[in-house]
Image (cartoon, rainbow, N blue to C red; front, side):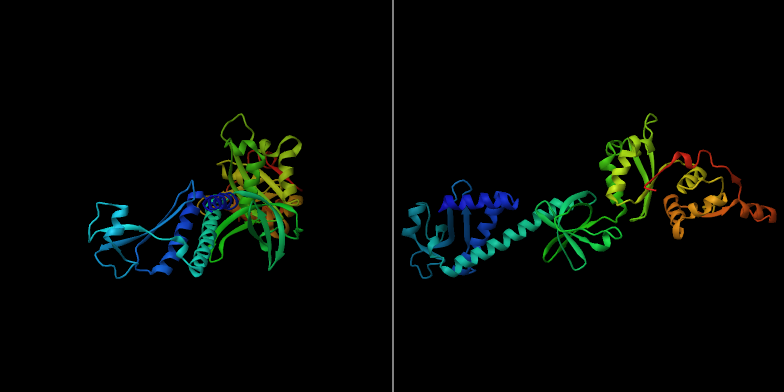
Length: 371
């Protein structure tokens, strides 16, 4: 029986990922709970399970008396000296309790407590494992779809991917393997809940880290990144070494590196922009794929006026203002865009209040993918 107990403990440890010592402590706690229910809560009971042999020792602290009135709390001197000949009347001794005297109710209580404790320990193991993985990408298999969520098996746990956190018009089938960003791990009464996202901005950043060795190794750094899921992402990058071209490293040979990310994002357009501390150049690059001819800035108000030719105006603004909106988020500057005709008219009327210059090395230094 004792050997069988150890086998069960070892199997449970392997299957549930719980330390063997933790299961033994849980079992000891369960048996202790059952013993207290059987013998009374006032009884000072101790229990020990030998990890190697599985032998269970159950003892109770009893007072040595001349005449035993309450056998659960008292023991005669004659019985006490069988275990310890140095004991005297009035002393206390750890007296063994017959495990088979638990009874059916006590055994059932021990079983229930054990299962409950193991479930709690399993939940703690899952939480401890995944709380440190928040901010990483996980691969998993879609199990089912219900109540506005996909349920995804990652490892031995089930994670939740809300439909609102997927890309527009993205539909997954049962059994399909997907990648998603671990956004959060929450503790609930039913256990830890792992929340996934494919719409989070950092999902793209982590994809770049996975696909671009220079970013993973810290040689190329993503300075800023902004995104409208399913449509466009803009990110600025810089290199810690002059020998590495940050944009080239991200794009890869014939666009191979960034195209794998574009495919993962279902064709989402990606603008990779070399970062600079010159605001004129940065703003001009941020408006990629448009080409900016001239630009003026107001540093006090942190606002800018970008001038493009007539053919580039709609590209610079983007569909429903998306391109300029993302450029403003990326740079932190308020940006107005006008064409050459409007600028010449403003200048003639004396309305331009900022110094207009050509941005040195503008759009040609950035790369747009997925167009």
